[in-house]
Amino acid sequence: MNIPGHKPYFSGKEKAYVLDALERGSISGDGYYTEQVSAFIENFFGVRKVLMTTSGTHALEMAAILSGLESGDEVIMPSFAFSSTANAVILRGAKPVFAEVKADDLNIDPDDIERKLTKKTKVIIPVHYAGVACEMDKIIAIAQRFHLKVIEDAAQGVNAKYKGQYLGTFADFGCYSFHGTKNYTCGEGGALLINQDKPVTIDQAEAIRQKGTNRSRFLRGDINQYNWVDTGSSYSPSDLLMAVLLAQFEDMQEIKKKRKAVYRVYQSVFKPYEKRGILRSMRIPEECDPNYHLFWVLFDNEEMRDCVLAALNQRGVAASFHYLPLHSSPMGKKMGYQPHDLPVTEKSAKCLLRLPLFGGMTETEIDYTVQCVETVIGAL
Ligand SMILES: Cc1ncc(COP(=O)(O)O)c(C=O)c1O
Image 1 (cartoon, rainbow, N blue to C red):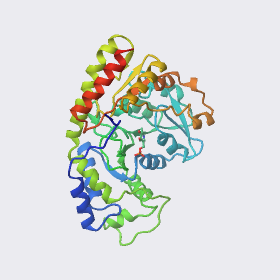
Image 2: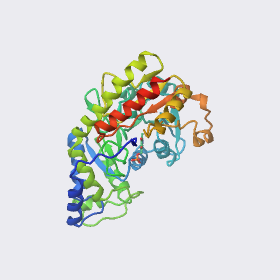
Image 3: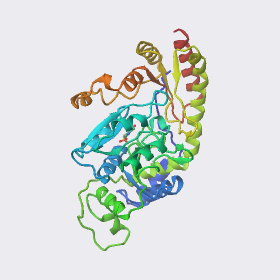
């Protein structure tokens, strides 16, 4: 039996909505479905302004531009993150400064953010790993004390909360991803959440997204022709994709419930092994309501992790690891980092194992995965 690591969950309405989008005849950006999805996110999650984007990567790039990043600026972010988080900063000529994560939830350590602050620091980018929130109150307090901007990389954090508030809504900007691997997906897509109460930022964001033009104002009927007004690019997704995404959002809680059920099974399966001291399961702090994006465990050492990973893969279970730290990647090394600069990140990445987790996972698939886990880890 083959169990994939992830698989998109379809609510069943996707096809009908895509057909409807085709029939409407308006399949480029900012059509009916884009409006529906952005309104849903604004209303449900409580966001001032949402702009749908072509990817989470592009939402991060827009946030980097809107934060006014330029050459010489420093941005503190975890090394335990995705390349897009760092690229968004580098594309502005600014410098990513990698901070440590906490060993229990693999989210950025606020104490290390403080240690990494310099006169050049302009932005902090917390990444909500596995859909479990970073310590946002501490991070926002640091940002306020030092007059820094914050961009939440909530690519994995859609429909997750911290202290009752949705991720992506705490900082100046929030970035969501709807990539095929995410809980809610349209294949490729994202959203920029603007939480600042400044219309000028919204105007600027709309222009950046619409090739540097004020086309969004034209589409709203505010002006009778549109023109080139700023530097920008093409970050607006096709309405066909937004039709798929709306269907997903309409089943948002159902998808979360299904993922939570798989998570709970894994949690109980791993408990005895945790007691034996050979591994540690991911921790969800009390103030976090996650979206069950991932389930991961940390083995005591790399050899054990590699052995379990290979044995599960051999049995057709697509267990995996994630992320390869940015600071010790070929790019990180070019920036002058050494693997030992961030020991918690380095060790965690080497000992981490992720298990398959997706909304449509059947009883048979769950049972088979659990059986393989019991066989492989039981033999250690
Ligand atoms: C933390 C994080 N940031 C950014 C991204 C990029 O999102 P996208 O694939 O939608 O460009 C990802 C995607 O996997 C991610 O996990």
